[in-house]
Length: 90
Image 1 (cartoon, rainbow, N blue to C red):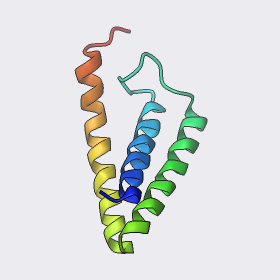
Image 2: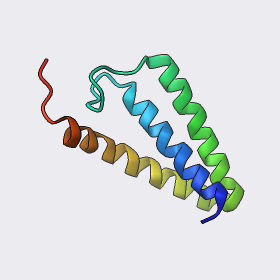
Image 3: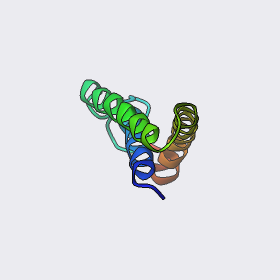
Image 4: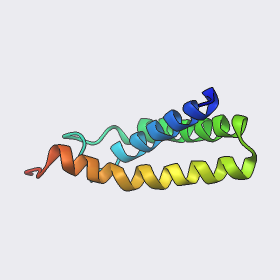
């Protein structure tokens, strides 16, 4: 697999993790990450992920791949949190 495709997958996945971890309703950790730094890091990683995909693919294909990965990651992260943390007591 080409280097920039792997870099795009990694950057986009980490961006989704940063954005999800900043949410007060996340279940991966006991407390949410600091909101502003996590969202800034997530936004920068989202841009880096799309740019990495655009290096190996045409613009439309890079956008489609990037958006599909975003949907997959944001759909799976809550289930991963529920699987590993189970029920959280307040």
